Length: 424
Image (tube, rainbow, N blue to C red; front, side, top):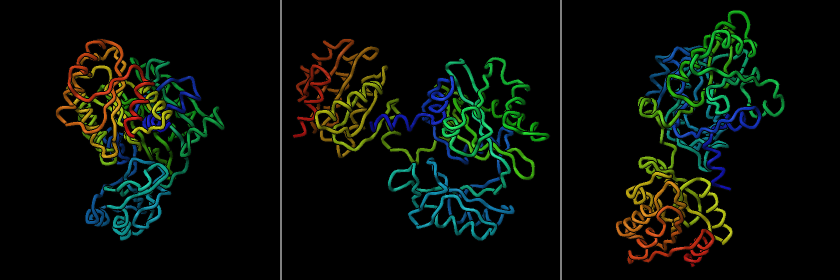
């Protein structure tokens, strides 16, 4: 189940909730990772209200901010992609990745205990994630918290706005305990959000008086940003009102349509790879999907379903996957070579299992790529190959005539047996 959990982790948390609790069907995958400050910069540039803030990546920068940025109270937030920062613990010994202070002299002191140290939360790996940047912001007194999200909905064939007056908490629990507090508003993508829709959503969020007008305007601007940047999701939690009667977006999560990268270059250039497995980043350069695991059998497959089936049957025969690399349906020979290079870069790998079902993908291309990779990277671990589908006979002939020590398998069951046996 580890691969399934990894895939689920990369999928939109909100979309899983909405799909299960409301008549909405959306499952985007999070590929582009923005830090909190990047999301807030994006909103700020588009007229959306966020708290005032500065960014520091060194103690000297934090010192400079403490002299030039004057607010009544500061909030210092470690910038990592994992949640649960407030309750996290740093390898420096500092407890909490979110700190409040009214003394500007404390800003560089907290920076010194955060920057360069690992922050461990419930959502990070065991050893935590290194903090390279901190956000130094204006601490704002929140009078009331609500929840707002805009996302693409397959069932409605367009955007849907999901809102709840119960914000600032786990939205999944709200959906479970009080589903009547979650509202859904479908937006005509050709017409865009109307004034009456924005006002209706603001009313359902229980904004009143001047705050009602403010909230409606912010909802419209968020929708305009959603369309402008080809987002698949914008989640604001909390979308709140302050004690001095302002409507602010206090935290944001963005997902983007990968197919829009060609026209959203500025945004995709913001992608933060600092917390990603370098092999995942390497694979993405060649339009391949890599997932690292803890075993010793490397697996090259085409499709997440086939990956999970391969993992299950390897476990049945007593083996354990070291990684999975999905080559997709339009793979070319060079990509197969790169896939082998990345798979075998893991020192834990003691065998390689290729399991390809050729529908769109041409098995002959896979076979040529395999033989080319084996020769060029001088593969030193056992290789088991199971191919089925388009041009499979030609592919088998290529493997058989290669003169390479490639073990072929008749089906997935046979492939898994042979891969596990090769370790002994």
